[in-house]
Image (cartoon, rainbow, N blue to C red):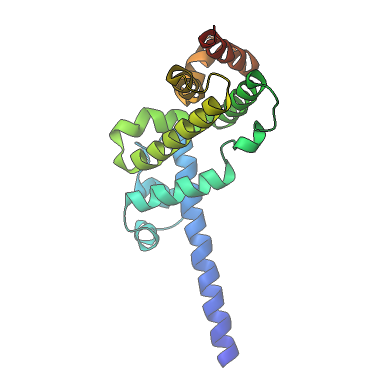
Length: 195
């Protein structure tokens, strides 16, 4: 009897975790397809194959759903990390490598970023995660700026932070530039400050 009870409890826990994951993945897919603003708890429940009440059992409110979705999405789509460019010898190579790493990342994840940027002003639940990502980008820009010869120039840091932003990538994308050309252009902005 004890073995049966333990097995049942483990099975229930596994089922709960599987249901939670289905809900998170449903929210993630809807955020990418239609955007956070148009993603409702009802739509998430329908996509996950559960009742609305089941969604609320796992997540007390919309913010909790967004936090779980963001966390899961970032696990599946981690942003570039400094090891991708820190080993580069010269300033230009380091800046170019960082920009290219982010631009390739944005290319692969653009649908999610487009929806998040579009809906951020209207969806308070995504404002926190978006602010955290912007803070990460600002930190990356500062670190790269400090590692450059002109590291004391605040214009360099500001230019790098602007160049690293998804909105900058999207603007250059709309002009038809490939990622290498985008990174080369942004590098030219940085090089222009050194003159």
